[in-house]
Image: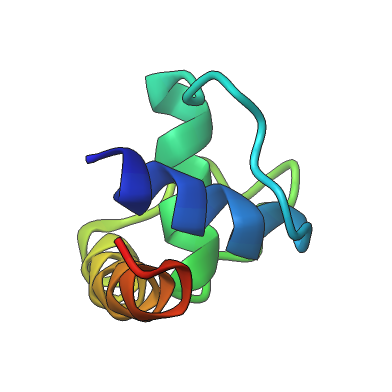
Length: 72
């Protein structure tokens, strides 16, 4: 499971190394939403189910690439 959050954090923050602690649930939902196309403006509210689903699919691809790249 660590591979999943580390790959999403690295993609969301555009950094090469993830932070040592996993994000909170609210931060993780917004990060996954951003992967699915959620813009996240002040008036946008929370990501919807379709955007969240797209984000989960993108996250799964990122985690697979992370495993291959890191050799996990």
